[in-house]
Length: 297
Length: 295
Image (cartoon, rainbow over all chains, first blue to last red; front, side, top):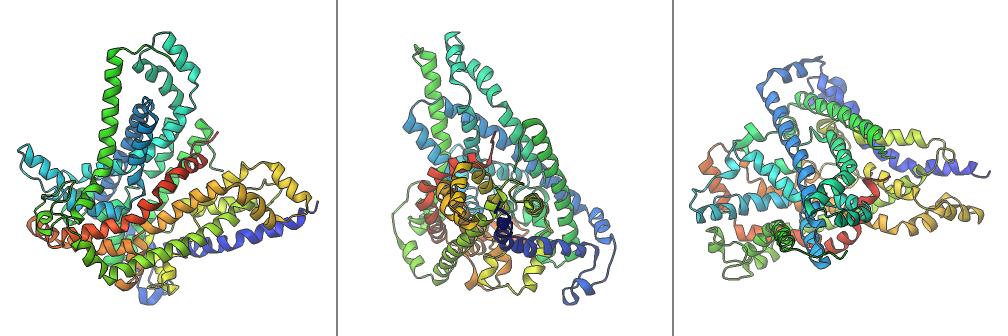
């Protein structure tokens, strides 16, 4: 057929975008060699001396790196767990509401934080919510508890990070669950009601099994985020007093690489993260394809 | 469903409504608090007396903000990046999604391209090589540094590609019968029937551009080149708290910056999002279903 000539036009459509990807995604990958060099900016990648695995050996020797990997995983895994469970509970509750306008108003309110940036939210939280004069300490004062310097406390930092992340995302997370709940056959609920099933029994024996596949799929796909503790959030909320519990891989790479000019070390740490994340994502996709028949394309 | 409702059932209903209402309230209280602080008397706000209702209402912060040139300069840069960046993103997204939505029979190199873009999405060289590249390209302190590096969002391409695949084949066949080529088919058949999906992705792209601060922070050295989020980040969040090791000092520094003025800035920077939010909400539910949980 004349479709032969189309091939060329298809290529033409892809080429501009592919060029952007080659320049801004592929070229930096060659920069990975910096991880094996003592990089000197003035001499460039070609002229900097090679040091083999020194940067990696150094990375495993300094106590910081153990701490940042631990912090990253603890924060990321807590977020993954909470962001699976809280939206599920919220969607189940929301599904019980029969008043259309009420449901819609609630949805409008809980989806909103997802669209606000962490810069803005961190400013709000740090200055007006968790500060000494903030809303939370006002509340504590009211019930007679001593004020707490939340943002400088290694005890409170991680819970605050996880809680504010859940606060931002749980509403948006309910969308997927609500979509899954609507696809459960109404006939099942009707016959359950006739059989005298209680509300809790309906949720336990119809809704949950009906959306189990979705829950498993979301859980599997979030495996790729085990090393993603969210730079934007933590960078805007942490300070030097909470590095012990709050410093993550991405913030460490930023500080050591762009602030302290330890290019080799920062690239090595970043490379570790890229490689492990890549493996995790490929694993999660193939698990999802195998057990949930999920295809991204 | 007609069911006789017992008292215990109605109590449970009331409890559910209460829990949901409280949760929803918690979602918007920090925003209300910011608005209340921005409208309050300075001294009252500094003392932390303002909760969710302004005390001694005054527009002083907003008046002061009107004469803050750097703020509006940054605001304008953000508007520009949303318009220019958003347009470029969408054009590239549409022209890439179309050929990739073809079967391998119709476009032989399709899978090769697919694996390539997927690889660029899943693996990255990391921050440092990326930063060095942008420096070498001479993009530091250039507006284009905020636009070009993120011009292709592979995630959005895949989203739109999946949507294009759901477009009935008959539409394309009819266009082909009439002698239309790929470009014509894309603009006259695929784009018009995919407008809801394109609108969704456009809005998300625009919000993404509006909200990003990191590229502005590391790629712009001069404050007059900062986009709005970077400006706010440098001003409020990053008051050099990184280098402080004394809790008392930290507390004092937090107090120096004027609460009411900062709150006004935060609130004004939220206004564009709040304005597009009703439209966003109408579209994004379809958008989410496009990408997530299919089949």
